[in-house]
Length: 65
Image (cartoon, rainbow, N blue to C red):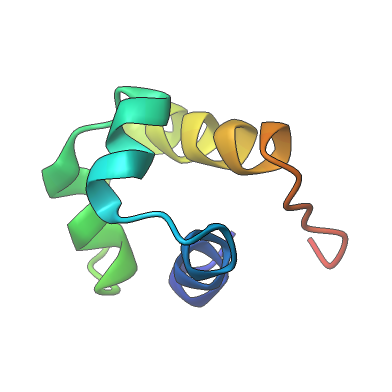
């Protein structure tokens, strides 16, 4: 999932970064850094998957992956 896709999913759900944090327990610093396009180390992939799972559980899918 790209930073743009993640931001669009939050906007579609009317979620703030804090609400995404609360749905996933993914640190706010990671959410902000990822959405701002900063490179993340591979070991943080679990955070990306947790955010994707939260979006999909809320009804936002990503068929173009």
